[in-house]
Length: 459
Ligand code: HEM
Image 1 (cartoon, helix red, strand yellow):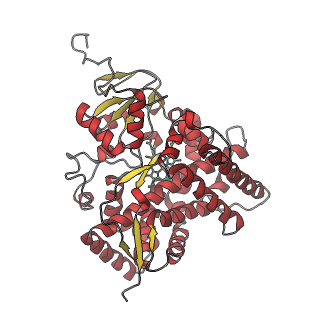
Image 2 (cartoon, rainbow, N blue to C red):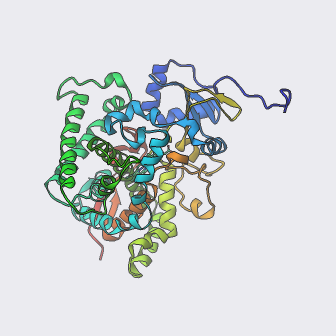
C-alpha cells in the first residue's frame, strides 16, 4: 500500500471539552452520570477528558473500538501503572491491580482457580448459610438499608472463602474494622475525593479523614499479619484462597512474602466485597421496583425450591440470570474498565495514541446505548432473553487480560444471595422515587443505600 492509499490517521487527540482541568475533574467526580453522557452527546463515542494529575483520558463508548482495543496484544498496554495513584494506598504495591506484564499474568494465573468451576461452586453452602443468617437478623417491620445488609453478606463471604476464617474474635474484629474503614472513605463526597486526589491524602492526626484511614488500615494489617503467622505454624491446607497463595512457589521456588500475601488479601477484599454488595442491593431493589418482575422471579424461584432448591441450580434459572444481567447493565458498579495505557504508539478508530494517554472503555455509556438497548433507562430483563450481547457490548466485568477474576464467583454469589433472600423473607421497598447511582469511592452505588422493610410473612 503506498502513501496515497493508506487510510489517514489523525495525529490529534479526539475532541473534548476545553474547560480547565480542575473543573473537569470535579465534574467527573461529583456528577458523573450527567457529565459523561453530556460529553458523549457533544463529542461522539470517543472523546478526550482531562483529570488532575493524570495524562489525557480517552473515553470509548463504541463497542467496535472496545473490541479493537481488547483484541490487540495486551503486552502493548499497561493498566496496573494507571491504577497506582488511587489504589496503592488501599491495596499495597504488590497487588494484582497494580501489576503489569509477566508478573501480572503469573499472579493472575495463581489467583484464578478458586474463583471458578468446582472450587467456586464448593463455596455455595457458605454463601447460602451467610445470607440466611444475615437476613434472619433483620428485625421485622422496621426500616433497614439494603446495602448495609448485602455488605454484611459479601464481607463475610470473602472472610470465609478467601481468608478461610471461621467465626471468632479475629473474624468479628476484621469484619467490623473493614466495613468501618471502607465506609469512612466512601460515605461522603469529601472523603471520596481524597481517594482520587493525592494532595488530600494528608495525615493530619487521628481525626483527619486520611489520618483515620491510615490508622484503621494499620489495625487491619495487624490482624491480617497475625492470621498469616498463625497459618504458617499450621500443617493442614485449607480450601481457601490464602492457603493456596501460601502453598504457591515462584520459578525460583520462593513462597510469597507476608507483605505480598497481605497486599493480595486486601486486593480481593477491596475489589470483591464492595462491588458484590452493591450488585446484590441493586438486584433486590429492581426485584421489588416493578411488580411484574417480582412476580416472574418468584414464580421461577418457587419452581426451583419445589424441585429441591439445589444450590448450583440457581445458575440455570433463565429469568434470574436476566434480572442479574440487567441489574449490572443499567447501573454498572464501575463506570469504566481499568485504563489501557499504550507502551508504544497504537492506532485505533482513525487516531494514533502515543504512550502517556489512557484509553478508557466506558461500561456505563456502552450499556446506555439506544442502538443496543432500546429504552436504555428502563429496567427490562427480557432484553437478555431476546438476544445475546457481545463481550464488547456488555462488559460489567471488563475484558481482555484484565477481566475481573471474580466474575463467575460474583455472579454465583449474586444469584444465590438474591434467591435466598427472596425465598427466606418478604420485603417491601420504602423508596417512593426512583433511586439513582452515586459515587462511592471508585465504584457507583445506590444513593442512600435503598431503604426497605422486612415484612411479616403472609403465610
Ligand atoms: C459484581 C461484582 C464485581 C464487579 C462488577 C467487578 C468488576 C470489575 C471490573 C470492571 C474490573 C476491571 C476489568 C478490566 O479492566 O477489564 C475488575 C477487576 C478485578 N476484579 Fe472484579 N468485580 C466484581 C467482583 C469481584 C470479586 C468477587 C473479586 C474477587 C474476590 C474481584 C476481583 C477483581 C480483581 C483482582 C481484578 C483485577 C484483575 C486484573 O487486574 O487482571 N472482583 N472487576
